Length: 325
Image (cartoon, rainbow, N blue to C red; front, side, top):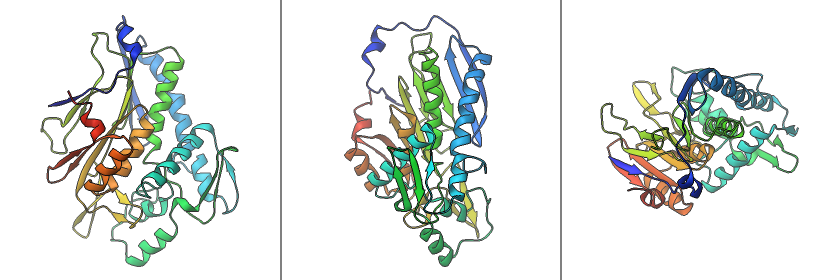
């Protein structure tokens, strides 16, 4: 099994492992499960810190909660600005930047397509979308319809697109929890929300927080083991959730440019980055792209990434190769 060790922060070498037991807590959020391991904080303390942070993330960016800021924005008349909370604004800024860097492989305004294929709040569908339906959803999608005023921290729709931040917001929620732990004085922890993780510091035994990248095939040796030392890990893949229509299995990953699920056979992409929002967004974008384009884009932007196709072929970026021991 390969081991990935990201560049370590200089202060870590001078730090001692925490002389405290690890507390553990977990709960439900964003349609999945969160968990946290924190040195020197018990389960009750972890829950007391994490729960309000995640409630804030849901209240701002959930497309499943009709009262969230995001849902209110999606109902706002076109041409009307909405002021965004700081976390919502940070995710929008990052999402629009990633949409530009990925040439639209990542698109935060593809909610109409997500709903059309049965992955959004309206629920699953029983029939395959027709060409006219896909064309209509494409016409109601696209980040170019968003006007973003970063100075005033406000957002507007030029045409009736639907925001869907599910490809990046979960990663930011991990960062929100990690930042809250650090602000409270905790330096050694591992936080996870639905497979997106961020670690800091060390375990009491002096080991890093090891994160395994599991293979899609159950029982197979993990593809990679990562030392999550002041680093985040996110994986996007179609083996976790798929759509079956008319006897055919479709990938959960949608290409917002074509309006349909990907067909190039990518099973998963894992990204390592200092912040989980970055890892989450890039994993989503790189999964959409064919492997040759994905590795080229990752190399262009210095992204540490590992991709796996359903036929077992792998690719890795140069930045990941530099981490492998």
